[in-house]
Image (cartoon, rainbow, N blue to C red; front, side, top):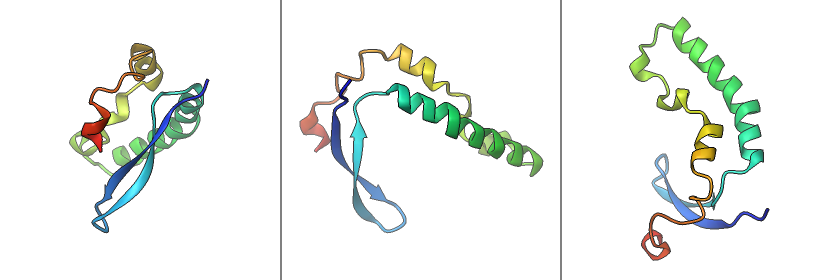
Length: 90
């Protein structure tokens, strides 16, 4: 499956400069495998450090409960249709 990719510009808040980035228009199986294999273990370790350091849950990552595989299933076919006209994103 070929997944469309667009160039977008993001604001680097550290420098105040615009930076080019790539926006992938789908969530692929490789993305989900990366999330499960790389992100989840790192998130688990970060949560353990936050607990150990006594950081209140209010300051924990808000996305810690997200299940991207479930989200991808719920969005199946919807990511192919932009929510905004491309001209509004330019």
